[in-house]
Length: 310
Image (tube, one colour):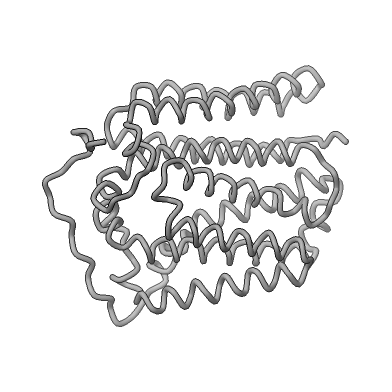
């Protein structure tokens, strides 16, 4: 499919600059997506203390095994961001030239070394906790590599890969504790669905650079109009899931949780659907991506209000 007019440009792609001699903290934080890592840490903390062990949250959080799990998960995630930027230098030079770090600030060889070290540390630490956690993080590291090298360039495959990793992150504390709490699986499913929506939206936003480097993402392969319908299907599934949770909470005396989900998650999700239908410019899809982030944060914070039902 040809790139639609709002995303096309006659400007040539800027060439990546040579790396500088020194590397400050800000580019490193940008490279490993520090705000995203902090969101992941918040998610792990609230799953552990809010969903799985709400009766003794501080004791649960100060358990050294949880600290090791969190460090391992964040190392694997940071490594994934680095390897993604390593393989996307030319594409990012078109889509996000102001955020280009690898090849401009950080030497590509050092970036690859950092990826390997962080991945190794993450897998080793989680394997020290249990073979299952080690296998999960090993699988996550390999999937992140595959995503960066190939999967992200295939329609829907890359989107589902990242969504699967997001759901797996939510499940990590449960895989460690084996509490049998059902709600953590519902949160993992919600995270999966919302992440698919956001990844599809980002693909539309990044069409210009992706098309110039032979990527076959969903909007390039199917067109923007059909892609919006695919994103809408996943969003509809999310709305149904959240609506069911709202109804259950409100009818089982969990009024605060029900009202929070209604006002901070379900309502914004419905509005996101309206914005998705009307979106036809790159800036519209960038706005949708921000909405997805806000909804995800609201969903994570709702864990503070959950009374676990066993």
